[in-house]
Amino acid sequence: MLCHGFIDELKINAKLPLIKFADDKRNRGLLQKYGCPHGAGSSSSEMSGVEEAFRKFATYGDTSASGSDMTGKNFSKLCKECGVADGKAVTGTDVDIVFNKVKTKGARTITFAQFQQAMKELCGTRFKGKAPEEALQAVYGLIEGKEPGNVGATRATTAGAVERLTDTSKYTGSHKERFDESGKGKGLAGRQEPADGSGYVGAYKGAGTYDKTH
Image (cartoon, rainbow, N blue to C red; front, side, top):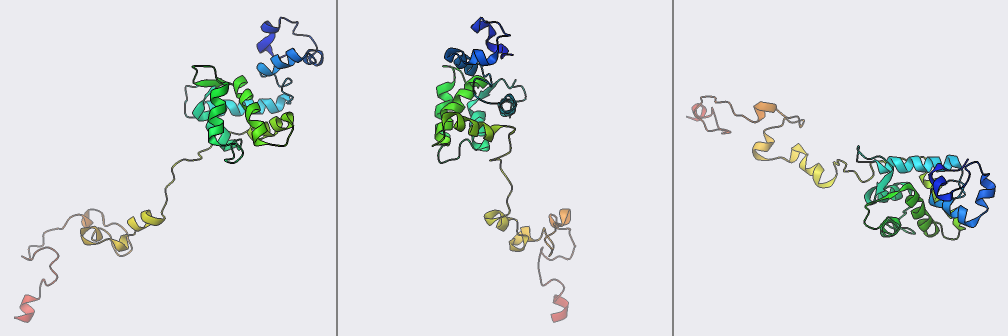
């Protein structure tokens, strides 16, 4: 059976054998335009995996997104995390240029069909030396079954300046008094100085020695 998205445009019988239908150059172009896996030379299972990845990245960071279209930010994320953009053959700039090239003028997102066109634009650059179909299959292989990760997310670190700032053994003054020798905080006792009624100023180290020397 043919992909249902283009039946009306083709004005043909949906039961027409796919092999005969795909023999016509114009029809192959329409198959590709509407994302039919046969038109792109890909297996239906592979394209299903690619489309699933597209939907997952399309909805990343936006719970209200339908998954039918993708923003430039998420397109860039997909390309980087799946390895389409390797920073050498294909850079982030290349990805942005292709996104703007395939999207509809004035639109801020691309559809899955436009996404496929974008992959055709990038595959030749990403896999130089391969035939167009082989390069496209290689790109789809990078994307198939993938889902968004937390690449680039801020992570806590204890190295360098942060480590020095959290080392209580280097604290001085009142800050030092808030921790015991093991580095454990003293809680309220470390922030308040209870009155002792001795008449000496706080932290005076000679308290109680007057009677001993006079």
